[in-house]
Length: 145
Image (tube, rainbow, N blue to C red; front, side, top):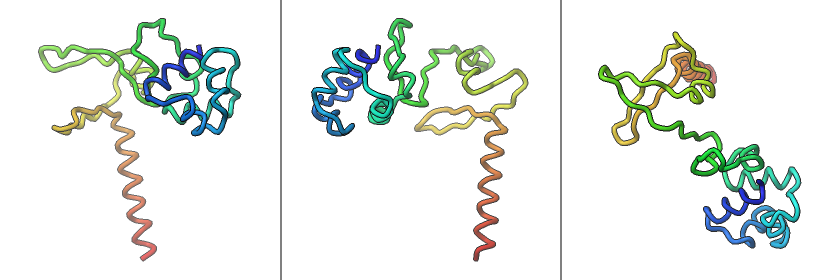
């Protein structure tokens, strides 16, 4: 799997094997052997490759296109699929999204909007914690002055 993923990621980003080798600090032959499945990169090189391609290490190593997904997602980014808006404006948050973001029945969600960027949803408690950190940083700054 890793050999297929390495080749797809390199081609998607339009890198040559030489460019990948230079960025990771190995020879072009090493990159070629990884992509052909002759050898596997060690953990340090896997970490460097995941960083280079902006993907999670687990996805770099284990991702399989058997699930019908569109490719290895960027690290921390997700496509959960389409949802339909009900007559009263309600949507159902996909199960995978609820699991990843630990959204449970009864949680309060904050809906934010930017006419140019779209809509964002976040847990209210996370927003309140962020706001408290801003407030604390401001108090700390005033004490130093």
